[in-house]
Image (cartoon, rainbow, N blue to C red):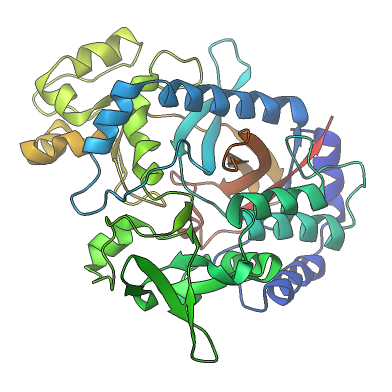
Length: 416
């Protein structure tokens, strides 16, 4: 954290400027923002962000080099959701980090999770730009990672999503996209790239082709899909799709849907031993194998007794989104209540205690820092932008901090 920027921002903050920020975001996206935007950005050194970016790349390369892991992760994809024609690597990656206080007293990043799925590439840049412009922040503060600037950032996103196709034949695919909380990101991305926003229920299947109906009524063949569909949501809502998700359609994926499962919380136990990864085991290994011994050997304290409460553990479902289903300090009886046949779909991870590092008028606040990457077909994995969530409770997502101030969606401005 860069203290001089923090102090100046707090001293010069005004509610009027904050409301101008919200108005600016709504105008840029031509829609209201459906989640809480924090009153402040955070100010981080490039060295800290680069440390996280390098760690995320290192962990990703370890996973991709492990054929046995990829096979096991593929076997864990829910029945009916293993899409054909998987790509050689994910086009998008997000690595979430907490800042914790190490045994030496220093702040150190720890991985929360890593996900091979797109994030808010359009909206997040707009948020950072709005903070900088509305609050008239110093010009020497940067927004980008990977040596990018504004034009090269959008060009990299275009190459990753559109990949040389006619933009009219590229769709951003989501369930009920106009009513998702992430709709502002969809709107700015589609407008900037010239691609079509499409509800997954409106896809038209003919032969081996997928199409959509244009505003004029004609059929437009889909050549490439920027996939924002979360399989968990389709499964939970029992959505009936108009096409077979698993068929080998004549279409390319920008963000092949299998990577949502292949690089996910499922990978965390494999990454044990890396200095940024908190110890983690599958629930079935904890209850039925040597998982508890592995955690203790890694320095995790486990309570004992008739029905111990594991205060140093988090229970996480493998394939959930936005923190759904996470339990803090689970008891052994709660763990045993999960049916044996589904225990392999849960993880127990050492709980990280986020250090509160952001001084605000509402008190010290903690940050979860997400490093966003793009990976165009046949090109290099590139860190592009930090995404920030501010909170003062146990959970960091915007859904979990709605009744507080100086928390929510935020941005990182980068200095020295």
